[in-house]
Length: 255
Ligand SMILES: *[C@@H]1O[C@H](CO)[C@@H](O)[C@H](O)[C@H]1NC(C)=O
Image (cartoon, rainbow, N blue to C red; front, side):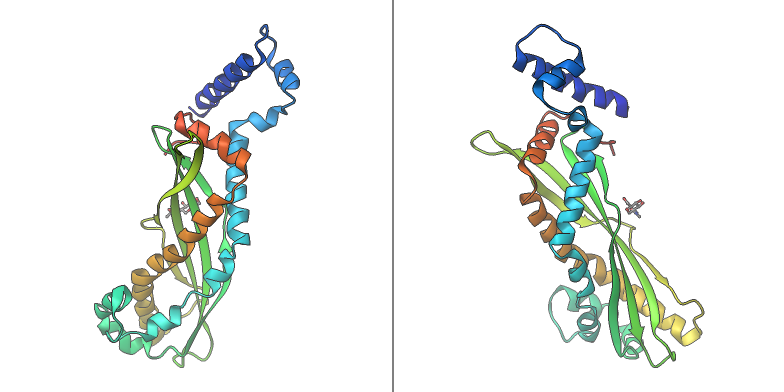
């Protein structure tokens, strides 16, 4: 399936190249040689790889890791008791039963922010891309319930949809569509093993609060970064990918 898609893209490019050259059919490598375009620049797999590399590097240079490290988690936990309005207050209002336990948390520090390898998929009709952005952080929870820091690993995937649109001048570019946490991708696990009963219920409370607030919190911080990165991508890369998407040509594995 992947190879067929590759072939279609390849044929499309070949047709274009041939038309441009307006010449007798030549073996492919000679055409490419004449065009001065290295073969690997036209490989669809490379395009996908270049896109994920560019997005990944872009997110890092936009300060993604710092954003993760500075998520205002403690503020959120402290706004419990329904005193704060808005979405988070509303969510926490539903969880009042767990709040007394959370009063045992003195501090939460986020360390080890991580961006793992991005995933890329193409929609079945070929016009959209879905970028999976796997993120990780470690929470160091300071609580008098245990004589040491409680370390909690949190993993979450954000999925960003990328669309190709044409502006009035007929110029294509890439824009961010839906951007949201991937359902079921939140993983919360205790890193430093043994947890006596009170700690276990603290971890459970923490888990239910994090489950309520963290995905939206991360999504709200990371999606604008994705948008920024998309608008700063290399124009040649954007053009190549936008053209493939507009034409619904497969160049990455479909969903
Ligand atoms: C999160 O993203 C990674 C990388 O694309 C993927 O391997 C993993 O299956 C995803 N997890 C979930 C639960 O979606």
